[in-house]
Length: 307
Image (cartoon, rainbow, N blue to C red; front, side, top):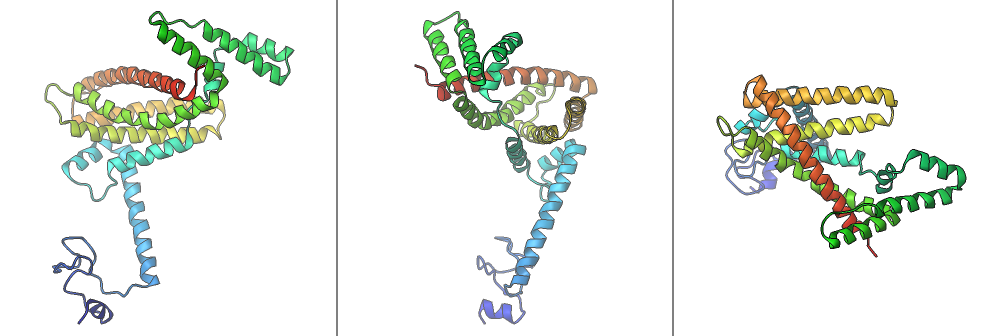
């Protein structure tokens, strides 16, 4: 009797319908396909869809709950091999990163450089010039300030800086576009940077495998991106005063969460964990500054065309 006839007769097939392996149970031990006897139908499709959605939703909610309230145990379980009931950390990381970039963006270049204009100068120009003249006056003032920037080094570097900054003022939107594209790539560098910092900080008294630090970094950065995304969304609906208090509360919550994560996973003393957090924070500030500087230089190089 053929396999399809066995299905219609309600009898389970003896071999897997997918890879033709001899079946030892309800699931194929080679490819994992279910050896069910039901004939493919719309009802079966709906049941499969419902099962997939509820199962995935359960895993997502369970992973997020443990990620926020029991991160150390979640990381330890994954490293030990308890992974089937949770969303993989790399998948959660990229989902959080996708949400982060969906609701945030790089600040426009012209908004950044406009902060350098003295307030009195802007008010004076605005009161004496029409809107178009005001914008042109601001551009002239900005170019004048750019010309005062000096680099005590190579003349070639100084010329590159002058040309590209001047060109960026004429074409700020393109600079912003380039910076936005490269920001999505460079933010991925936070993952290996964080893992290496943890690897150095926890090298004594007993070294920890770099892989473990990588999983810790994945979970920690996922929480960071999710919280920043939520704060970005709430900023559109809350007043500035409420947002100020909310940002302080979220910063405190992230600090406490990181402390619980590091102390619970690495099982070091509270004082040692605090000291490592301080060093990690300083290293992160330096790395963020260097990444931001690199991003600005890339934006000027690719987004601004010097004369």
